[in-house]
Amino acid sequence: MINFVPEVNVGGDLCSLCNGTGFIVVEKNGVVEARPCECRRPDHVTRLIERASIPKRYRRRYVFETYRPIPGTTQEEALALAKKYASDYPVLPGAVTGLLFIGPCGVGKTHLAVSILQEVLMRKNLPAVFVDLNELYREIRSTYGALHKEESEYDILTPLAEAPLLLIDELGCVDSAWAQDTLHYLVSRRYNEQRPTLLTTNYLDVAPEGESSLEERIGVRTRSRLHEMCRTINMDGPDYRSAPLKG
Image 1 (tube, rainbow, N blue to C red):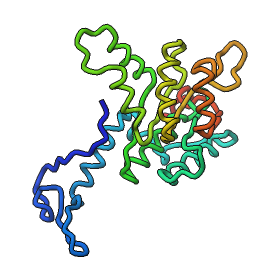
Image 2 (image 1 turned 90 degrees about the horizontal axis):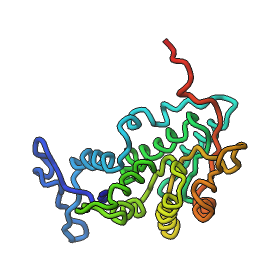
Image 3 (image 1 turned 135 degrees about the vertical axis):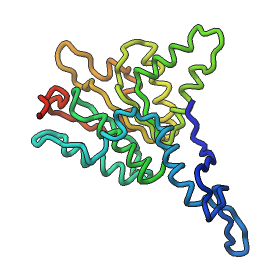
């Protein structure tokens, strides 16, 4: 289960400022108080990154500097909007506090969304969490029927619902009434508390013939909330994963 409470864990050589305690004592206006020492900062950032649950494959590759928008597509605008969101966070103007990246496979939706998370984590030292919806559903299903449950469905979902910034990847990946209800619970809790949320999906609002729309995959109620919570960023372009490798 995700825990957002920082822990004191100072290792290595003792700091000359705090003598390894992680805090320095200062006096201000006659009041003595303890403040976190600068030596805690690297450990704090490391813990934030670990708790963010960003897949290792994404941590070094998915940053703004490595995103290469294809000219003539909407990718350049998407990059600009993602950068602005990361720059503004956590002070987000207006009622819309999230971004929903929509588009086909391989146009960089997850790349941009994870880049926002990494900016927030590493440059602003603020907590954020990544969740792959496929993995979340598997984790929840694993608790059903278990004789000795270490975690319940509520235990799994609550930290995600309460995360200061959450990225939900692969929206609409499972098409079932149970999946829709589970997602609706998570989105509704974040909607009610106005918590900033990023989402990615391959499903379009207006689906091509023979395919499901996003609303059909996630349900009318959830799509309605996302309209109010998020700015929708439609992305197009070829699948970069299918491009021939340059030798």
